[in-house]
Length: 109
Image (cartoon, rainbow, N blue to C red):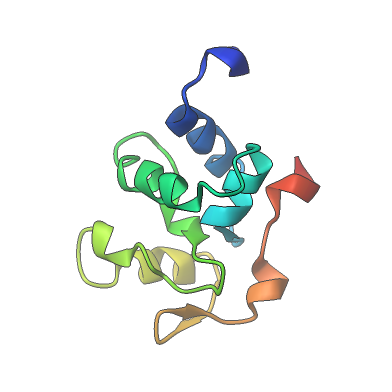
């Protein structure tokens, strides 16, 4: 699909699909990259609706590295388990070494 034909959620999914294994980004970073800096919450809504779309939603966290979307995953700790399986350290729902594992689409794409 051409980018101009994608709706906002689809654009969010296209960015999220490019987050590298073992990295995380934030809702706000995706929103800023898409030219909608104040739409972090809409990115969150998109992530909530991404199940079954082959989108690595577990790699999108809040601006402080908190797993704020974890309750939208099946099971109690699935989001954390998926991140840890990629080598991301999570303690008390918080990504550790956040700056080291942070992927900024505005710089990388």
